[in-house]
Length: 252
Image 1 (cartoon, helix red, strand yellow):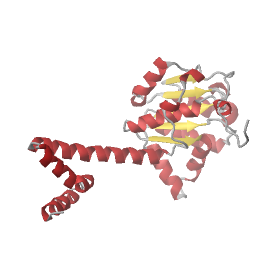
Image 2 (cartoon, helix red, strand yellow):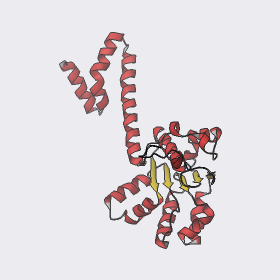
Image 3 (cartoon, rainbow, N blue to C red):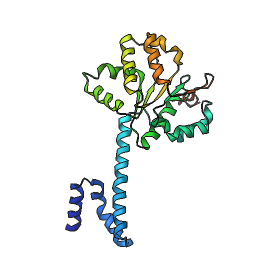
Image 4 (cartoon, rainbow, N blue to C red):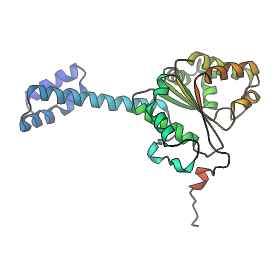
């Protein structure tokens, strides 16, 4: 590699154009072979750097989201459920509801596909540049209780609070104490009108009071979550998708 190339690469690194610095020799060779104009060369170089930065940003956001699995719409079979159709799914994919801080509530039995759909929406949102956090209700409670003295919880809490979309899985899966209900209310209060939510649960909002143990907190939480909301109900009679596609170590 010539000294001229190395000098240009050093200047790129000084300007924090790290990806351009690595690809510069190849880009310049292609420019010479293809006879690019100065405008075309600048366009290619800057477009390349921006594309690399966007990809790195998506990778970082994907890591921060902490999805339990990488699930996409390509793997989601609409025909296996009756909760939504093509039209509704396309509306959800547009993500206007994220900008409007809507709550999407997905209710139905275990294995109906609620978590898959919520993760697919979260992955899609990350790919569009939104910051997303996926967390189970139980883990959220743990983070809220320990964020002041456990570093990992503090970091997780900050990322959740900075998120545009917060996905809480298995809401009201178990009974919570009054202190925990208070923490959950404060969390919802702090993020109300600042983030969109996706909540998955096998319990309807009318049953939440039994698990939070405080009707006042329950009413206040639901008042904020349901202010702008869409409820997607998965059929109770639907066969569990997990059981339908279960794997076995024994031959059938």
